[in-house]
Structure formats: structure tokens, C-alpha cells
Length: 527
Image (cartoon, rainbow, N blue to C red; front, side, top):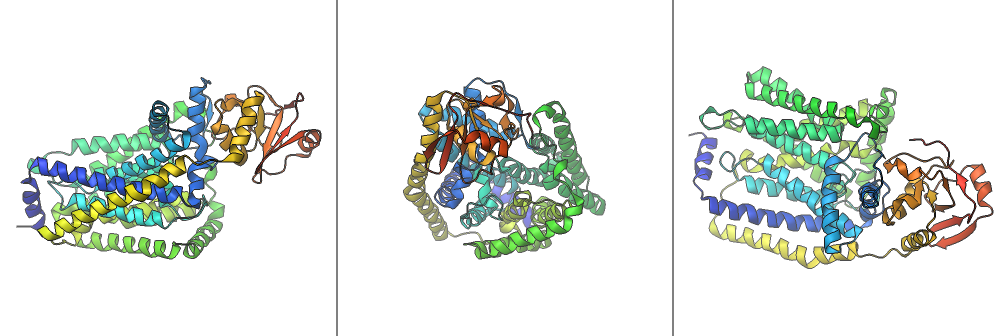
């Protein structure tokens, strides 16, 4: 009897009650791991991407704008962040009900995002009736992700510390979850079902996930639609496999529908994404990413991260070679995705002349997701009772460590005090007047105000800078003070001349130049 058939019979005879217990225990372990990862990010220099980074302030700015009752006229990038903002809104409302502050909601979002990743990995690992040790496979992959994330420790938003970006709402976490989930749904669509049933549910799920992901972020086309479609079409042609072709059609149909859905939302899209493409910069792009790899090798934890990533890639290659049985077709797709997606995405990003590490996230996540195939590809022996007890004890130990160190660290991070920031927020609130500041400076104070309209995001020439901001903020048409810090580029000479008569208010790292009753007119907006 083929191994996959034996596995199916064994797993199908387990009682539903025991299965629920095992799934629940795995969720608890995954939650503990998620808490540890978020605690690590929140207590290292990487915390800047969670709590102070200008891009990361978008969800808070949206929440403040909604609470203030503003008209919603947002200038987004090519990414609309629809799933992220929906989840953040729900957590925001929960935070308001429980008295949790803004930073506390940010921490909660990080944990929820990682649990979403675990859920996607659990889909990838397969059904208990059709896969070998799927719960263990999902936990293995999630642990691999955690190890990579624990190697990240700098404040850089543009390094190859890609795994820790999953705890933020503005560095494409929902898109990456959608990529992993799509691979899992394709696995289930390709896995032979009993009595020859068609995988209608899995195909429907692929259409929906691809549609929502593309609607929110067209990068899904590069990260999933294009490479997976190529793999599926080649597979269908080589093996005459109709399921592969149906999977490719579902993925393409969902992506096309999602992209078409962006047309009515064009008013909110300040850059359709094509502005990032410049084929003439391919050599510069290659050099740029090569330098990032070299920098990663020199960063704390970088050597371990590079070696771990290379090991995951090798496992994906080995697993794709070993999984050749008819019943292992879906699992083999997962393994192939583990090395095909990184190669495709990295090559495409270089050819298109891109310059942003976050565009290469599948290079970290796809090999990690392929780890779910370890129990099937390498036929790990079934654990005896003592080994099972030891494994359970280890899981309990993880939970205890998370509760003992991770949770208090998260509480401390969420309750941190930033006196310089509090000084600016207090002064602006008391003034009741409208001021301005440049992107990397003004977004954090703006996100902490009860009324974000009191700070307008401007450029160096006092033109409203329409980028990840509500355009209606600039409705007053003038500002009577400017907030600056070390990240603020010098203002234009005309603005500097007007500021010579300003009263200077020192707030630590921030400086407020107060013009009192005199106001500076804003120029035409730019994005």
C-alpha cells in the first residue's frame, strides 16, 4: 500500500475530540511563540518600526481621522492596506472599550498578525485526513519563522530583516499571509479527494484570497499570481493534470477581479505602482540588493539568519525532489513554491529596477512555509509515548517562558513614556491652532493627537504632502507653527526667512517654531 494511502487511513480514524485537543494545544503554542516574537521586536531597536516609524503611523492616523469625524479622502500609495486597516479598526474599538492605549493596540495587532500567519501555515500543512502530521508541520514552519524574526534587531526599515516586518500593519503583512494562504489552498485543490470530488471549496477560496489581496496590494501579482501560475501551467502541460490548470485559472481570475476592483478606488491611489518600475536601473538594483545581503551578513544575528534561510531553501529543494507520489502532488507544490517563488521574485525585482528590501519578502517566507512538508518528505518516525510527553512538556515550557518574559515586556513596551512626544502633543492640543511638519517628523505627533487635523503634513516648501494622509487635513490652507526634528530636511529659504521671527519652543528632540498670530499660507498639494 502506498505510504500516502496508509497515512490517510491512520489519520482518518482518530477521534474528532482528540483532533480538537491537538489543534487547540498547537494554537496555544503558536500564540506563545507569537508573543515572544512581538516582545523581541518591541524591546529592541526594531521597535521603531512598530511605534515611531512614519509609515507605520498610517493605521493610527486612519483611526484618529475616523474618530474625529473627518471626511475620508486619503492619498494612499499603490497599496490600500484594506485587510490591515479592517483588523486594526476592530482592535482599535476593542482598545477603546478596554482602555488600551494606541501603543497597546499596535502590540495587539502584531500578535494577531502572527497568529494569522500561523493560520495560513496550518492551511498549507494540509488536512489531517490527507496529510502526515500537519499540525507538527505547521508548528515547525512557524518556529522557523520565529527563529528568523528573532535574528532581527535594527531600526532599519530597508534591511533584509524581513520576517519581523510581519508585526507591522504597513509593511505588507496581509499580502504575505495571502501568498502563504494561496499556496495552502492550491495544495488542497491539487490533493486528490475521495470519490473524485472536485475541489470547489479550495478553488473558491483561491479566487477570494487572490481578489482581496490584489485589490489591496498589486504586489500580490508579483509575489504569487505570476510565479504560481507559471508553476501550475508547466505542471499541467507536463503531467496533463486538470487540477493544476483549474488552480491557475482560479488564481488568475481572482487576481484579475481584484485588479479591476481598484478602478473605482483610483481617487485614493496616489501612485499606481508603475512609477516604481525603471528597467534602466536594473544594474543599480542588482548592486543595491547585493549590498543589503552583505550588510545583513554583518548585522547582529545576520550570519545565523542567512544560514537559517539557506537551510530552509535547501529543505524546500530536497522536499520537492522527494515528494513524487500521486497523493503527494499538493505537498510537492508547497515544496516547489519554497524555492521557485524566491527565485522569481528576486529576479523580477532586480529586472524591474526596484530599490526596497520589503519587495523581496517571499524570499524569507516561501522557504519557511515549505517546512510544513518536512513530516511527509522525510517520513519522520512516530513519537513514542515518552517522546510525546517530552514534546508536550517542551510546549508547556514555551508557554511559561512567554508568560514570564514576553507578556510583561509587551506591557512595558505598550506603556512606555516618550516625554518629548508628550510635550509636542500637549502644546499642540493646548494651542488649538493648526501647524505643520514634514513627513518623517510630523506623523508620530499627528497620530497621537485627539484631532489629527491640528498638524498638516507638508514638504520643505509648505505644500501639503499627499502621501498616506487624509487630504482634508490641509483644508485650513495655512499653518501658524512648524514642528521639526533631526529628520526634517531644511525648509525652503522663503519659509526659513518667515521663521526668523518665530518663538522657539523646545521639546527635547522636537522643536516648535511658533509664529503666533501670523500664519503661513500653504502651497498647492503634491504627492
